[in-house]
Amino acid sequence: FPDIKAATSLKPDFFERNPDNAADPVALRILSPKAVCDAVMRLPNGILPLYLRSLRLEERYTEAAKAGASIEMHVNNSKHRGTRGIVPLAWLSNERDKLRRTMSWKERGDTLFRNGDYERAATKYAACLTIDGDVSQYNQNALENDDAGGRLHAVLHCNRAACLMALKRYREAVKECTASLRIHTHYMKAMLRRGRCFARIRQYEEAVAEYERYIRLVDEARKSPNSAGSSNAACTFDRPIDITDAEYLKAKQELADARKSTDAAANNARKQNQSQKKAKQQQSCKDSNIGKAAAKSTAKHPQEGPGRDNAYAHKQQEQAGPGGANQRDRDGFGGTARKKTATKKKEFSRGGNMPEGPSGNDGIQNQQNQQQQHQKQEKRQRQHQKQQQQRKPTPPPNLENVHCHYEVLGIARTALISDIKKAYHKMCLKYHPDKNIEEGAADTFHRIKLAYEVLGDEKKRTYYDSRRR
Image 1 (cartoon, rainbow, N blue to C red):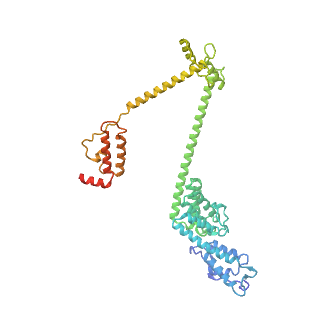
Image 2: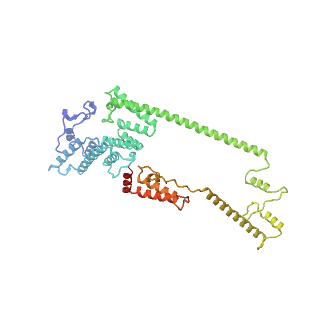
Image 3: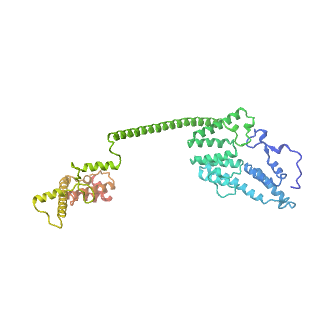
């Protein structure tokens, strides 16, 4: 701004340490909120919108809000109303809206995740990722989205990976972790989650590589905590030096499990390859034996050629008689089945009379058909008589001395109404007079019906049981 004086000195409170940890080294010092409000007044026109956006993407929401308010308050003065020199400030309201949506949607996603609603939480995180891209829909393939970068988008991708892991969609979670690590290559939480996802989808070699990288970074940071590697300027919010002993030991145990799974998978693959190789050898030996047998057969019968012609020749030889003539007559369908007309002709010739009709052959054929039908009819009658003899009616039980309706139906006194109905229908089918012709079946059927009339009605059954007591 034209009326802002140039800074000539820095006060002690111009910088502050990283608010996440007061013991951070000097290299990680950042501008205090007061210093941010003072700095935005002196930034060049083209850098000012980018600086406010970077504050939001680094999740420094307080500084971003105060810087925007400071700019707006100064612009609203009569001397600079509506512009900052020659640069319009229409972007400021848009940036303020993005800041509001980012804070609200991320907080809503965290709440849904804590409540166990992982599907909706992942959707809310995805919506938050689309704020800077100015797109309406998030691409489910995280690697195809255009990330604005910064701590915000790295954390959102890592949070989506946690939701997808809870939903057991590990392959999608791997892509989210990879998108997060593209922004911050030493983001320890994303690195560990990607290793766990690899182990879940049985990509053990990749899982072992992730675990080893995670443990190596922690070991290096603990050996030299004051080195540049321990401060890890690429990821100031989740550094190797911040990993606790419990997290470190758990990662080492998971690494050991992944190595065991790798060895087991290698052994299984080796056994499978050996079994496949053995099966191929057996099949090769079998094919070789078949080829040798065929060669021996060809050597024994060199005059016979393979194929359909050879089978036809054998058939012709079987049909041919001793004199070489074909003894098998053709039937009406073009086959070579033997016909019985010759025998019938001989019988008629012995009897001296041929059946009357348009031709002798037709009469013989009709007579044969009549004889076959007669034989089939006699066979069916014999089978029916045999079945009638085997089917014996069931004699009715002796119910002369039975006065209990439960005993008549053959059920217990504690039987349910459904059991009573089932027993009644079964007894009726068995002793109905139309189906059972034994003596006494009608009387038995009458007793069964009477028993069901009493026991099938709740009131009558209750009265009947009380009288029996």
